Image (cartoon, rainbow, N blue to C red; front, side, top):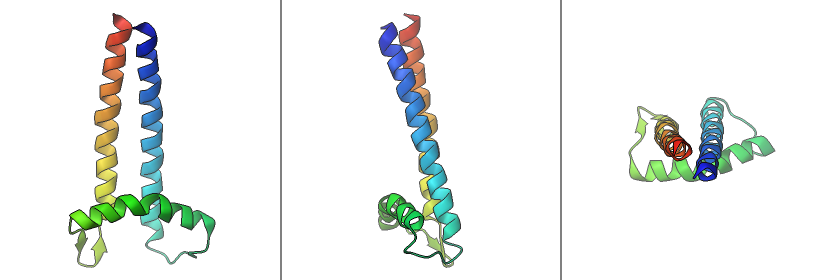
Length: 101
């Protein structure tokens, strides 16, 4: 059980890092929407391709345009934040209980 606990702790840290990185990608994408970036830029293409599937699903399910402002990145950031705190905390708790056994 000791090794499984440490494996779950490592998994929790990796999930936390990935979700934090995705949060930053969403923030940068939202900031880029205020300017008119070159769509041929590889960084801009990466940001759009990384965020488009999530933002598209949110836009399909929830009316997120209020007064001409698209708040789907905000909804996605809240979802990532909740995932980070729920999933990472749950994995860490299970890992700590397995280590203490």
